Image (cartoon, rainbow, N blue to C red; front, side):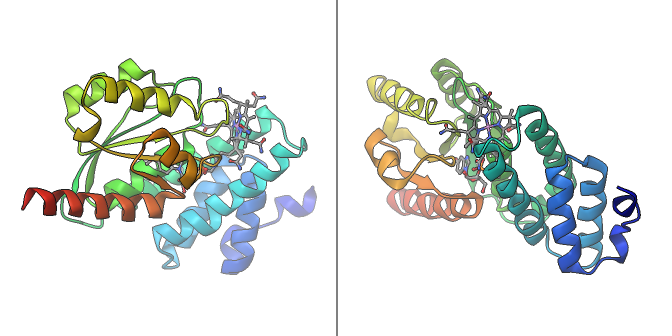
Length: 232
Ligand code: B1M
């Protein structure tokens, strides 16, 4: 314990610091994560590398131990809060790339599901790539999605689900859109750890996005296709 208190983050090498941040994320140490993020950025790390190598990689370790019953909800919540604090610092940096406006996306986690870290990350990366993003938060019913499509008039609808029990709800949303004759008005992208390409096809989405970077690339491709089809 005494040893842990003596660690001075700024004196660690980059590799040591990243490993230490994985430990700190695991332990839910919000301030240490904020310090670590600031140090990496001050050393010239890109916001994207800081996000993926220090934060997302750390959360993967948390996820494995959660799955294996080594960590429980309270600890994972602390880890998630620490991760969000780090993401909060990175958000303006990811967005400040000055990318031209690409299109608009409405994104939300589906009904029954409160996981939002991945969805937030997708939103941040999309904003960084020049998309306007309207984030609906978590636990969205079909009515909430439809209302947002009506008021926001986005090009893209993004849905996130992290639970095998909530991912089928995406089909409920898409089927309702089909019933209302509005499915083809939107590009529908879906993501979340338990999904895959096959599932996305089966529910009638346009594409499955493995991670936030893929979401950005996929969104750009679909927007380009839409522009080509419209001749703009
Ligand atoms: Co939960 N949880 N959790 N959890 N949790 C998982 C998902 C789980 C896999 C853990 C495990 O067992 N290994 C498991 C699901 C098992 C299953 O369904 N088969 C699980 C469970 C069981 C539960 C509870 C049921 C636990 C309980 O209460 N007993 C409960 C459910 C609550 C509910 O939603 N109703 C629960 C609760 C929680 C916390 C509240 C403690 C917390 C969430 C905090 C929060 O989000 N604010 C939490 C966390 C943190 C996790 C893990 C550990 C991490 C998720 C995460 O943030 N990953 C997760 C384990 C895991 O996934 N390995 C787990 C980091 C994030 C960057 O990745 O979210 O995958 P991810 O997002 C990626 C891609 O998937 C993709 O891009 C993102 C960025 O690259 N992506 C999209 C995601 N959404 C997208 C949308 C798009 C495009 C791409 O739209 C275009």
